[in-house]
Image (tube, rainbow, N blue to C red; front, side):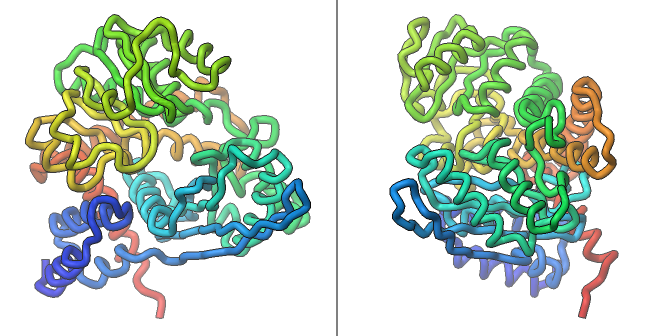
Amino acid sequence: MTDTTQQLIRREKDTFLGEENPFEAMMSRFDYAAELLNLDAGLYKVLRNPEKQIIVSIPVQMDTGEVEVFTGYRVLYNTSRGPAKGGIRFDLNVTLEEVKALAAWMTWKCAVVNIPFGGSKGGVICDPTTMSAGELERLTRRYTSGIIETLGPDSDVPAPDVNTNERVMAWVMDTYSMHKRHTVTAVVTGKPVEMGGSQGRREATGRGCMIVTREALKHLGMPLGGARVVVQGFGNVGSVTAELLQKEGCTIVAVSDVAGGIYNPKGLDVKDVMEWRASHRYVTGYTKAEGVTNDELLTLDCDVLVPAALENVITSRNAGDIKAKVIIEGANGPTAAGADEILDRKGIFVVPDILANAGGVTVSYFEWVQDRGGYFWSEETVNRRLTEIMVHSFHNVLDVSKRYGVNMRIAAYTLAIDRVAAVHRLRGMYA
C-alpha cells in the first residue's frame, strides 16, 4: 500500500470515535481489509465515503389533529455494482451515523454473496409502538414522497427492517406507484406475496443463519445434532433461526427479547415459546424455563451464540465473559470493533453479519428478479437457490480467511471490498 493510503488510514484511526459509533466501528474493519488488499489511495477515499446522504422532515397529522414533524434519513453508500438495496427502520434510536453504517454493511453484504446490488439504508426517528396504523401509514407515505427521487427498481430498492414489515412495504410501493402512474412492484422487496412478494422471504434471514451455522460446525468438526444454542433477540430473525436449528437437531437452551430472556439447560420447545410470546407479548414469564437478563444470556455456556437483536451488544466490556465456541451474527453490527481481538484471543469462531444474515438480501434479490421478470418461483426453488449461494459464500470467505491468515470478519470485508473495488477500476471515474 502506498504511503499516502497508510497516512489516510492513520488519520482516520486518530479521529476514531470509539466502539459506540457504529459507522467508525465498521470502518475500522474496512481499514484493516484495505491494508490487506493494498488498496489504491484514491479508491480508499471513494469507498470510505457514502455517495448520497438525505435528511428529510416528515410532517404528519396525528389522530389528535395535531401535527408532529419527524426526521427521516436515507443513505446510498455505493451503487457501483447495481441499484442500492437496504431496509427502512422506524425507531427512536435512529441516527445518521447508524444509517450510514448500515448502508455500508449492505454494500459489503451484497458483494460477499455476489449479488448485483449496492448498499443503502433508511430510518425514521419515531416510536411506532405509540402510533396508530393510520399514523404509521401517513408517516410512511410522507417519508416515501420525501425520498422518492432516489427510489426505483434501477436506483434504490427498500425492504423491511426494525419495526417495519410487509404492510409498510406495501405503503411504500403504493405511494411510489401513484407518483409513477403505474404499478411498480420491483421498487421494494419484503412485500406481501399477493402483490409481488417472494415465497420464503420472511424466513430467509433466519434460514441463512441456520445454513452458515451448519457449515461452521462442519468446518470446525463439531456435531450439529445436540449443539447447544443461545439466541439473543427472538424477533423474526432470531425465532426463525432457533426454529430451523432445532429442526436440524440443535438444542435451543436460551432465547430473549427486549424484556429479558429464558433459559433451560435441557432445551426449549421453540414452537411452544413462540406460542407463549404470541399470547403474552414477551418470552419472559415462560413457565418451563428460568428467567435471565439479556446481559446474562450472552455469557451462558453454549456451543453457538446467535446475537439477532441490535448493534453493539458484544463489546470490549463483556467479550471476555462469552463462553460460546461459535458466534453467528444474525443482527447487523452486534459485535463492536473493540471486541474483535478479545474474541480472537479466546478462539471463538465468528461468522460475521455481512455473511451470516445475508440470506435476507439474497431472497430480496430473488424477489426483485421475479418482479422484473413477472415469473414467480416455488418456495422449494427459493430455498434451494438460497442454500447454494450461502454455502458457496461461506466457503469463499473461509478460503480468503485461510489465504490471508485472518478471522472470518476481516476475510468477509476483504472479499467484499475487493469485489466492489474491481468494479470501480473497470468503470473508471466519470469526470
